[in-house]
Structures are given as C-alpha cells and as structure tokens.
Length: 340
Image (cartoon, rainbow, N blue to C red; front, side):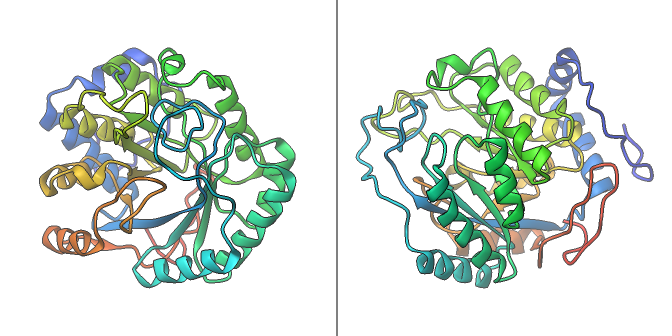
C-alpha cells in the first residue's frame, strides 16, 4: 500500500494489464489504496461542486447512442437555439449562491461555428466576472477555436472519450475516437484545463473500462477533471434498454481512476440521482471529490440540492468554498480554495 507521508508519483505509462489487475483487486484493498492516494493530494473532507447549464439544446447531427439531443434518435426533446446571455448570467448567479464553484455550459453541436463561438465567449466572460470557474462543452474544436476560448479565459473544456477505442463504434459512428483525441490535444496545447471522462453501463465489459482509463491516464497530461458518468437510459435512444451496471463496477472504476490519475478531480456525474446515499458514500471513499450540483444536467435529472446537503452533512463533508488555481501536474499551485 502507498505511504500516506509520501506522494504517489504521477505516471503516464500504465499498461492495460496493470489497470485490469487494479480493478480486479479485492474491493476493500482497492478502496483502501484509492483513499490513501486521495489523501496525498486532496482534502478528504471537501467536495468540489459544479453546475451545468444547457445553453443550446438538441438538434445535434451526431448519432451518439445514449443521447436525447441527437437528431438521429427518436426522443421527445424539443431542439432550440442558443439561449440569451442574461439567462446564463442568472443561472450562474443562482449556482454560485447554491455553493457551486464552477459553472459549465453545454451546447449540442458537432462543432461550433465561429459566430456561435463568439456568443459563447461572451457567456464565458460574463460568468468569469461573477468569480466562478468556467467550463464549456461544445463538441469538436479546431486549434484556433481552442486558442480563442483560452484568450476569453475559459478554465476547463469538457470533451469525454465516452468509452474504449475498441467499443467506440458500437456507440457512435459519426465521428471517430481519434477525432475526440484531436480535440483534447488542441485544448491541452491552448493551455486550457482538460475535462474528459467516460460513460459506464453502455454494454462495455471490464476490460473496456480499464482501457478507457488507460487512454486518459497515458495522455501527455492527465485530464485535470475526469467525469465518471453512469448511463441514464433515455426512451427513444438505442441504449434505452441497456442492462443496469453493477454499482460495484462504478465504484471500482472511480477507485482505479483515482489511483491512476491521483491529482485529477474525479467527478461523480450523470446517473448520480439514481444512486443510494450508501453508494454515493462509497464513491466518495473511492476518491470521487466532485459532483454536479442542481436538479438538472443537460437533459437528465440530478440529485436534489436538499438531498445533497443532507448527505454531505451526514458524512461530515463540505463543499469547497472556491476554485483552486491549478498549475502543471508536476507542480500543484494552491489557491483560493486551498486543496480541493
């Protein structure tokens, strides 16, 4: 087991077999190591809260099998255009008042046009002006678009890899896994923090889950934020009848993400609303130290704020007070929120 007095070194050379072996360890041993690693890099009593707002819903030309926003899926979601700037500002103010330190904006595009990106940049600047960290997920980006977002002060860009390279074509055919990695490279080179994670419960096996983490943990820099989503089956999508994932597989994946990417935020994301309080507590014990705050994600329900506050109180956890300035992963930079 790792020593609590000595920080685990960052690695970018994880073999698949080693990650599979981690995930297969006895449950108690796996959680003990994950919690030990977590305590080396983060305050174990704090949870970072983010809020998520859909700024442009539906009408996406991609065919992601899990998504209600795809034009190719038969969901009842009504598509719309970009929402007004003031609506974003109002939502960000409410999120900050509720305890969120990061505000995420999502738009259902394959990739943004330049005029649309200009409007999103106005939103980013307005949200930053409120003292919140900013995150956006807008689809694929060119290198120039990533630079524009950096100049606007965007803190994080979310672009999930979703699943393993080998399983990817079972879920999405309108873009390739390599397309996803290219956008992540543009974001990283622009100097924006990378937010990239996975979706579990789409029919993949444990080897696929290990492979997802291997892809993320062997990037030139680990993603600064790693969302771990549990599929929320949506009527009218190809995955509406996907069998439920064993919750212990979710917890094992979180623990393995914590061990392989020790300085990354690991966010318990979509699907949390359906988890019991006991399951969420085990996720936190396994190293999850971030979640979405608020009753709504992009198109799915989230845990109610009163339930969240009650659970955190029962567990003796608290929301982080503000964003932490994050330097390179070789040198952590403590900031306003201290350790997160």
